[in-house]
Amino acid sequence: MPTFELGPNQYGKAETRLVRVERAAGGDRITDLNVSVALRGDLAASHLTGDNAAVLPTDTQKNTVYAFAREHGIAGAEGFAARLAEHFVATQPAIHEARVSIEEYPWSPVDAAHTFRRDGGEVRTAVVHHGPYGTQTVSGVKGLVLLKTTGSEFHGYVKDRYTTLPETRDRILATSVDATWRGLEGCPDPAAARAALVEAFADTYSYALQQTLFAMGSRVLQRCPEVVEVRLSLPNRHHFLVDLAPFGLDNPNEVYHAADRPYGLIEGVVRRDGVEIPEEVAWTF
Ligand SMILES: O=c1[nH]c(=O)c2[nH]c(=O)[nH]c2[nH]1
Image 1: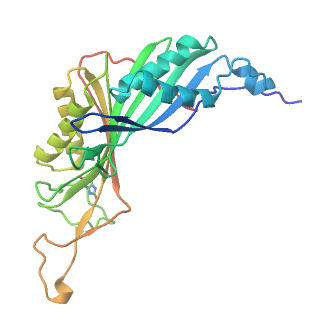
Image 2 (image 1 turned 30 degrees about the vertical axis):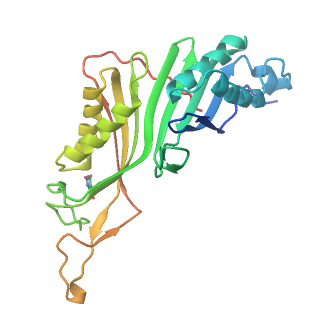
Image 3 (image 1 turned 180 degrees about the horizontal axis):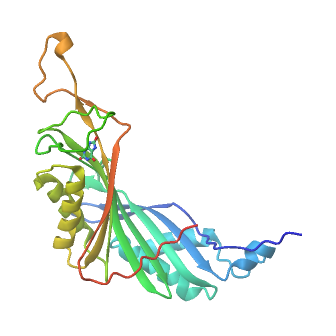
C-alpha cells in the first residue's frame, strides 16, 4: 500500500483588488493595488483531515486588507505589505510565515480635482516575506516600456553558417523592463530606483542590450545605497528596418517593422561588490 506525505504548502487570498481614495481639497489621490496574501505554518491538519482549527479563512484575509487600508492608510506598497504580513504572523499562532505580494497600478491626475488617467501598462511591485528570518522586501517594476531611436549598435558577434543578421551601427533599442531590487534593511525608495533604470537606459550608448542591462542595474546600485541586488529581465523588442527598395524607395532609418515575437530575452543580476547578501527568501513549489 503506497503512502503519501504532505509537502510544502501555503494558502491565502490572491488578487484582492483595492482602490483607496484620499480626498483632499487640492485634488484627490488614488492608490490602486492588487494584493495577494500567502500564509505558511502548522496547516497540515486542514490538508490531511479537513480540520480547520488553525485556518484563518482567506475571506478574512481579504477583509483585513480592506480594513487596514482604512485604519492605517497605505503610504507605500512595501509598508502596507509589511504591516499585513506582520499582522498575520503576530495574531495567528499557527502561522509562522507570511508573504504579501502587491502590484500597484499607477494613475496620474488629468486635472487638479478628481479625474485620473491610467499610466500605460506599467506596474510597480512589492513582495514582503515575514517570518523567523525577519522581514525581507523585494521591490520592482514590470512592463516599463522604453525605446531609443538611436545610440545603439550591434556588431562583432559570432557568425556561423546559420547567421543572417546584418551588423548595425545604428538601430532602435527597445525593451519592456521587468526589474526587482532589494536592500539589506528598510525599503529602498522605489521611485529613485525606477528613475535610475530609465536614466541609464537613456544615457548609455549601447553596443548590446546586455551592456545596457548592466548599466541599468549599476545605476540603481549607485543611486540607492540601500540596494544590494538588482535583477533585470529585458526582452529585446526588435525593430527591423523595412526593405523599401522593391518600391523604388530608400529607407534611411525611418520605417521599421516592430516585431512582437520571437524576441531576444536578456536577463541578469547586478550585485554590490564586497557586501554579504542575505539569501533571498522565495517560496516555490
Ligand atoms: O543587444 C543585442 N544582444 C544580443 O544578444 C542580440 N542578438 C541579436 O540577434 N540581436 C541582439 N541584440
